[in-house]
Structures are given as C-alpha cells and as structure tokens.
Image 1 (cartoon, rainbow over the protein chains, first blue to last red):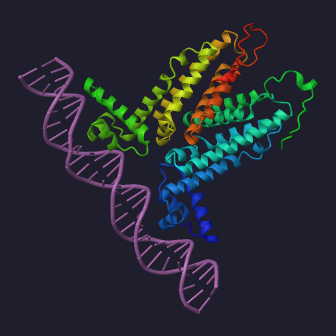
Image 2: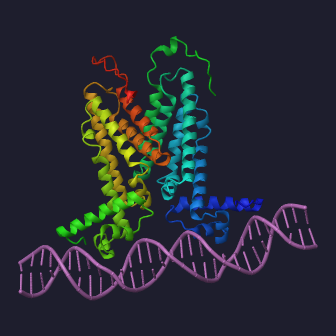
Image 3: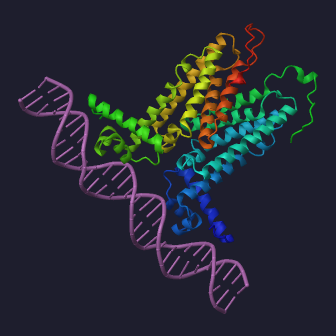
Length: 215
Length: 215
DNA sequence: CACTTTCTGGACTTGCGGGTCCATTTTCTG
DNA sequence: CAGAAAATGGACCCGCAAGTCCAGAAAGTG
C-alpha cells in the first residue's frame, strides 16, 4: 500500500508536514484548511492526498508526531543528563523558557483533541511521548538517589510520573490563563521534593554504597 | 440586547445547554452539530439562535460554563472541608473516582481547545475555575498548617498551584493513555508533601500509616 | 531506450453544517 | 381583552473545505 518514496517524494512529504506544522502553529488547527497548507507548501491537492491517502486525519497525525519529537528534543541536552542539582535547575529553566516563548499555544494538545482521541495512532504518539519523557526523568531521579542526594525510599517512577503530570497541567493552565505560575510551582515543588530532607547523613555516612552508577 | 426570559424560555434554554452537554459527552465536540443538538432537545433551529444569538460559539461557551460548574461540585463535600488527613484522602479518592468514571473524556478540555482560546469569555470560564479550585485547596492547606500538621514554611498558594497542576496533567495524560497512574501519582505525592517532616513539634505522631497505602 | 512507477497540477464535485428569515403561536403586561 | 413581547417551527440559503479525477511530466529500472 505505502508506495515507495523516491528521494524527491520524501522531501516533498517532509515539506508538507513542516509547512502544515507551521501553519497550525500560526493559526490554530481549527482555522487551518488543506488549502492553506497547499498554498504555504506550494503543492497541489493531489500531492496532499498522494502522500496522505487518509486525508486530513492522517496528515494531522503526522504533524502531531512531528511536534511530539520536538517537545523532547528542545529540552536537550539537559533532559538527558539530570545528574546534579545544577542540571535539574537548568532543565527547569529550559522548560519554563520553552513554554514562555511558545505563548498561549500548545499545538500538540489542540491537535490531539482534534483527532479521534481513542484512535490507535493517536494513542501511539502520546503514549510514546509520555513514556519516553517519564523514563528520562526517572533516570535522572535514580542518578540523584545513587549520589545520596535524594532519599532512596522515594519511588523514582512514581515521582517522575507526578512531576510529568505537574508539567502537563502547568502548561495546560498556562494555555488557558496565560500565566506560567502553575508550571513554575509544579516544577519547583517537584524538584524540591527530590531534595527533601535526607537526614543529616549526607556528610557523615558517605553516599556511595550500592553498586549502580547510572549514567 | 438580552431579551428578558420568561420562565418557559429559561427552561428551554436550560434544556438546550444540558442536551448539548450530553450530546458532546457522548460524541465529542467536533462530531456534534447544531442539528444533533436540535434533535436531542426537541427544539428548532430558530430557538437555538434565539437563545444564543452568537451561534455555536456562544452555545459552546455556555456548555463549557455548565461543565466547569460540575467539576467542582462533584468534589463536594470533601473539597470544602479539607481539615484532616482523613478528609484529604477522601477527597483524593473522590477525584480519582470521578475521572475513572468519566473515562477517556474531558468535555471541558476538548471544548476549550475548540473555542478561540484567547477569547475573553473562555478566559473567564477557565480563569474562574482555576482560581476557585486553587483557592479551596489553599484553604485546606492552611487549615492543616494551623493544626501544625503541615510545615508553616510551606507557601500554601504555591503548593495548591502545584497540586492543581498535577491533577490537570494527570487527567490530561489519562485522556491520552487511559491510565490513571499519573493522576494518582500526582495526588499522592502532592499530599505526601503536605505531611512532610514537620519538625519534632507535633506530638501527634503515631499516625504513620504512610500516605501511600491507599487500598 | 522502452516501460513502469511515482510525482505533480489543477479543475471539479459534493455534502454538510452554520446561519438567516418569516410566519405563527404562546405568554406576559396593564 | 387588547397589544406587545417572546417563543417556536421549519424551510431555505450558501459558502467552504474535504475529497475525487484524470491527464501529463519526471524519475526510476531493466
């Protein structure tokens, strides 16, 4: 079914996805028509349907995937190296800055609520994003635990899940209210929770211990 | 401008809003047409525009307001009396249960992303909901602080903001993945943070049932 | 160089759904 | 009871945007 793509075809497909993403960022999903996309990408109707036989639905899904990749990639390099408090706070600032710049828009969210929410394709995109994001956070948390900076009793996966939820909610609220306060609160308290009171031990009873050195 | 409503008129208007809300819950915003609403509520096109001169936009906004009211009201009575750990956990369970039942739907969220996000009316609805919700949480937190159960240093408003963000994000993730794990994690860790290590002062002690034990 | 496949252009169809209109009936007001 | 205001029914309009079609150009392949 999927016709083999020649290099030229792949390039065109790519151009369409990126153009569509840009258009949607600029005007919102609901306001964006296939014709807008066609105009911006200098393509024809038949090209759109050639590369996305499923029509608008399929195209929007591809755009969503594209945006999802972007979300994680511009939290880098911080997100992959959360091995010191310094790194955590740099990451925190990067996240806030990213959404501050993005303004009252979240293409991904609006995109998702536009598509059939239960569709398998949609599930795949979001599920993958959530899993990957959370996993990276959990790795960072375990790294801090290995350094004895974070209480070992803490369930790293649970903490990562909660932190991620806080970020998502913070962004969602920002979209509605325009204020970053909730996002910042969620991040700051989430991180503070990681630093919470390990007893005085840190100095005296060396942290090292157990084998695993993540990273 | 707004024509006075007779009792009959008010009832019809009400019927329209509730019917529209039901229809949207059942089929999603994008799939719901004015004609569906007309059919379900046994009204005519002209009635729809009679009560909502602004057309679909205005009707959807009214539905959003209706749903927003609902969100808070079915966290009651817990939400208004967060004065003991017992109450906090009952509330926590009520929230989880509410969204478990609701399933992979959040009419309010999809509704919002459908309307012009920056429209003053939309801002008003969400802003009001967020403010009210957060305020109730903050009151509960201060109540616990007054009892010495929660560290006085904690910024109640910030903690409430973070907790609320966690809930929102948890629900959002649930909509995408179908799993309640993130919502539960956010709630459990958020509440645990409130119980965290108050200095020795509180003699109460004992209750070390540890927050996570739920079920 | 034949030939096949993929890529592109753009005119055309079509149905749907939001919105308008006006005639008629019911309810309010004094 | 009479006039006004509000409520209702439903036919009609109409623009737009998704999707179809086919003809022809370009690019691969043996």
